[in-house]
Length: 425
Image 1: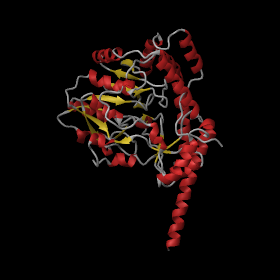
Image 2: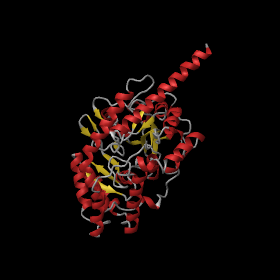
Image 3: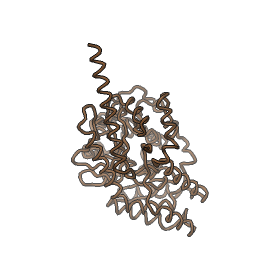
């Protein structure tokens, strides 16, 4: 059977014709789809002002928002201890001091009580990250922000389409950022978008986005070509013969080849040249098509999550993702706790399912931030969860196969432990 990778990309069926039409009209770079995409995205969210940002990196939306809010130099921003290292580093490049607050290990999202403990007289903002596709518990965070005069900037890179108490994430605070990298809920092969409540702040974000250079056609063609091959290589029938043999071999020698796929942890000042560039027309045209199909993408992914819940939910030792009743989960990733996760991961990979350890960072453990050893027990616990493939392009049969394999390996571990205890007695 074909091996199944941990990630899938959402590619609309009309992708080829969209790119071909933009190419034929000479509108790969500039064109009318950008404004139309921004308008349609704002309608999808239901409020506020939106602006596309960056050719390749959604994190630039965060940078523009921070610059537009005019915080004093050295002001503190509270960031989850469990997040992609780039986010607090971007805050530092923008002149702020990131302060880490722990997460709830059940939901993987920012713990409001930890936020309250992290507030100081220098705090000016808090960044709730809706990790893995589930909203933070926003009401207590927003209440803290009101009482202390803080701005709330939502990180929605994983969570487009998720809701909190019936409201879209990304519209609850003062501003928010979205990412459109290939594996994200909306894939435009890179770039991102800023949502802003206040019109004056939105204007300052737009000025910065407009100040970026247009990429040349060669760069855009390279992005499209890379996205096409990325999508091809991770499809199960191709993944079996492309990346999977590397993953399989690495499982026997303790190597972590996936680390080469992620950006190297390092200072980002000055911002790297590839971070620069305006969001393009062809990306906006792809985004418009993806936005129309987003509800069906989310519905199918949720169906897969329910299937995994049914298979794994009652198994001793396994904790499936928890979605509180007041929130909807879009399952950018399906993260579960399993016993002896390192062994389960290795055994699943050797049987053709790329069950993976989580790839976000416990930032309190990174020397980059000088917080080595700082206590964040929730983040430390959350980092032991594993990711089970859930993306909508898999078939129901493939989802069932992935869930059954995890179930079998956990049962095997339990049997081995029972046997060891019996031998000891």
